[in-house]
Image (tube, rainbow, N blue to C red):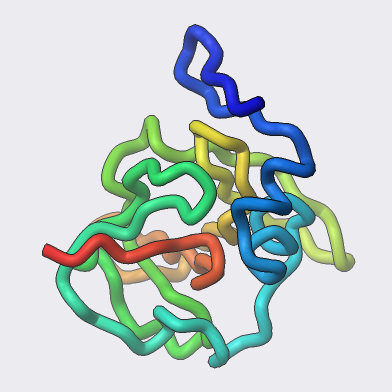
Length: 136
């Protein structure tokens, strides 16, 4: 049964996640998989709107902060708010990176790097499968 904790965190059973998400969404959000580069729905999409978590609907990124980094995944220079993301140290695959998670459902979104454009200098490299675009 889906539940929200006092702090608004979404908790669901693994079966609920499997029932509600597509196989690629489940793999990315719940198993920390990565979609192949240049294959995601939003990589080259620049339609105006807000990108929300595909798992729980929390607003994550604005299309105003999206840019074409050439990396093969949607890239953003900033989240809609610092409270919408959690970060964790990630040393998987022989790399040292900062993983980005949805702060409401703990879904894996992608990673953040310090090679983005101004003014933040950050590049949030996010899997399309972890997002849904709510058009303006």
